[in-house]
Length: 211
Image (cartoon, rainbow, N blue to C red):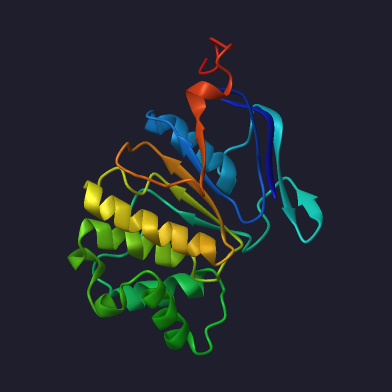
């Protein structure tokens, strides 16, 4: 579904990875800058210096993420603080040119999935940290994408709320959504169903892995 073939970018050297449809993959790295580079490579904001990234959608490989193929959950909060959560999600749907017919019903369903149905009329600026993470996940899954990529969602949460986010991520994976979790936190427990990748252990023989 997503293939990294000997990708080099900044301090990332010869990174190779194959993510199959339906997988839950957690890429662990304490250096948040490296995670951010991976996130930008996945969402098309950055191009590899060497190597290639390919995306398989409906039997066709492309070098750019196909439209509506991947949902992205940014580390930073993208919601407008003076708009309600429901207004924010409706605005994001408009910007992405998603189907607006019955959008209130669709938004309500999404908020139920992320357990924020009780916060729909709260302003984004009034949400707690863990609620903001859930809200950002909500905007990432508005169109129910086949793949969801999350940039370090648990790094600023306490252990209890971090595990709540992980339970949500695992539930999305059970909906047949492929998950790529970029993670710098040691607080999370994913269990045996997740494939754990530790960047420093991928090529232990390469001293120049990080440049």
